[in-house]
Image (tube, chains in turn red, cyan):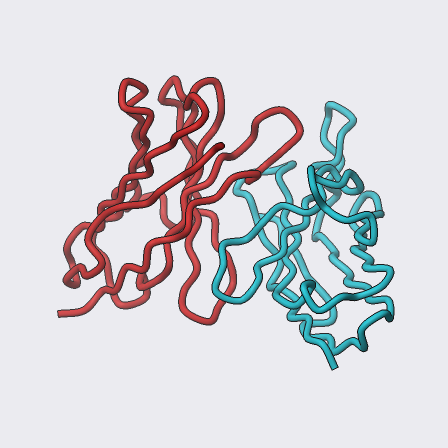
Length: 118
Length: 112
């Protein structure tokens, strides 16, 4: 079955770069869009951005200056990089399959809690 | 950026009774291709969100038929015909007609 799994450091220092990888299994990463979404503790969902398997990206304007999403089709993975983090970036980060035909966000990872603290 | 406004923000429902959640967008969600990309998700406590409804009114695979979605343009509704204990959680609407993708604030549903 389709599974997504986020991996990366759970603690990042302020001003440093948050990096996460999403490993996809059970389905090829192409030809779909893949997103990162985050959820601060006790709060709602915020879309960070997506990447198409070809490498085309689109980012939320609120984070665009600090976000990079990349894809490695050979490993069936895509990744998130968020620079210059502050405490406000503390959140559960989810990866999810974005648009694939009619569905959007039909598969999600279990989420990775990333805390920004010195 | 589209603003998605859900009401109410919380709902307490007796099992077996209906529930309804409204989602209003600040602009029409009708795409130039004729489709309306409005989705509903349920996030159960401690879990990742899961897709319930896609393109306004289509139930995702495995979603019970007590869930239904309706609406057009800027006004949308999720209805649960008879709430069950497993329906507890936070419900989010989300629009994918425009970019960036935008979620509603969420509606917390609890059982009385």
